[in-house]
Image (cartoon, rainbow, N blue to C red; front, side, top):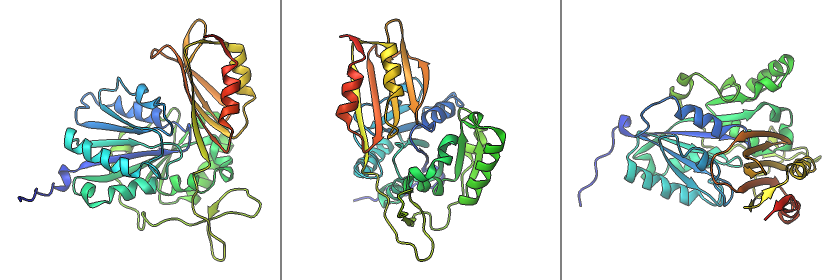
Length: 329
């Protein structure tokens, strides 16, 4: 049997991993990046949706690149084997020079990095950069999000402190100083709508020492959230199992007044809602993050199709309340 020649380092596919907590702006960043180049024939996008309904893949359908979706789980846990298989198929089918992986908001980038270290994949592709998008509002509430939140920052070569326009100048300066102190080896750029210089993305980063070694975290007795460990502190592993994803779909018309009230009364444990909503006179895309709603035009399927992500919430109770806003079926 003839052994296949090893690809030269310059022939390997360059993998750029986009990480970040729920609703930080990863898809916005990816759309920006894909708009920079006119020829995307050798670029493949792999989107990991945490749930059965794929929204981000639909948003990227006109990008000019090939988009592959992984749904029904998170690549950091249940879909690691699927990720490896999908990347193998992508290399065989497309032989790309660049692969973007947009991970779900509850994915630990360390797990993805470890998959890329598997010999079958390491032979043909290399992890060139990890970019983490950080919602500026979330930094102040970081202790509520636990170890996963810190891991996404610690692994990043480049951190985009996004939505900086929503902060006053003093708070923005303080956040940048605090983040630099927490992850001094990462480049940090404040952004609005993830707008950055393309060179910041294409520049290949030097590997961080020990980047694939697990970071240990401890859980404070007061339950205020996991923090990096120091000497003498008890340790607890990252646990994303309490995150819940569920979907609401309806072909009926949604009452705007009812739906706005529904959003206002959601429990704080519902971090994220994304997808199109069918109102009486228009279709709109809802991007709901941490109690704040953004509404954008939508020209896709003419039905309501929402993905919810929360922490230890009752999906049936929330879906029941959402269904009460469907005025016509």
